[in-house]
Length: 502
Image (cartoon, rainbow, N blue to C red; front, side, top):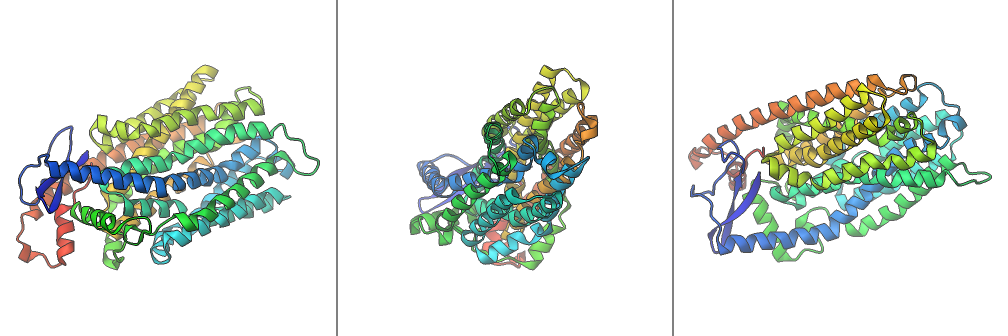
């Protein structure tokens, strides 16, 4: 579904949301005066101005955010790299100690996640997010000096706590800066950091495996180098990141007025809005939001399997440690390509929910292939399909969650936090389903992924049906007299403009 700007008068603009696949009233919205949308010179001018604005934000904020997110994903997944180059043997880890370490990261991460966006709204992204980057960079580097597995367990909890709030915070400020029609693609670019980090970490670990230092082990180099690099890059964030368009230093007054007016008319939030307790409570108890974020849970479980366990899965097929690390980049390359094509996938499918179903189905097919055989070429193909489908889902579903729940700042804050919470919670599953004793087939791990992906597909379908019903109710409420509305004029404009994006 695309949102197109149409002209109404020379001094103002409206917009129209179009479901290109069906043109149904479930997902269509016409201009305020009820006339059908049409393209005018004013509409073309507005669209060009919007493109110029988005390019400016892309260059000044989004590119840096993606770089920092690549480091974020690389730092949390570095334990998988360290495992293959000697972490377990040097620390005396046995049985499922490695799974415990990866699970403890999730415990730390989720411990403060629920409150992170509310803290960010008060402190500001320009201060909080770079601070978090410096903190987790320090913790990541300190993992390189530990001597026991107990120390590793503590550091994994601290790493999760220091990273908590970063992803949800980035998603929230992205929703502040971009209109609905541009949001899903940008969120997809943001999640491109996950496969990119895997692409870089595999060859990095392969190179580190050839380092021989008298006092520093190869796995220690992984943590130290990645942590120091994160600290350096994070410091630049204090000068680059902005809180929201209204306070953005590199936007002109005309740009600020334009984007605020545009986002108000499309029914999405402005970053300067205050959080309402009643709106927050309503968003937290919205069953539809939690159902749609379960699809994110499923796709994150699949992609996490690729991020953390791909080197081990390949190693168990008979390849050396160095070969496994180099080859582990292959499914992530497919994942990166899939994310880049995520926006096009949504356009071809005509809706986010159907594109999400397609992505989850590809990952499902890959999991089935890996569970069904030990044939090496087939399993490599299956792993690549899991990477393509899982990461494609990351390029589609989180953006859909935030775009579809943007009626006010509270809903956006809850939606971005819930998306990250559910995605991170999947770590409890993915960290404990690929156990050493199940090698080389890992039938339990692949079977759990198959079940989750089935449920994720069902969640997309249920969400589509619910949103269609809610949009019909919103269409009916739009016809109510203005006198019956008790909110402010801005609230009235937003409520009449808002529709759930399918």
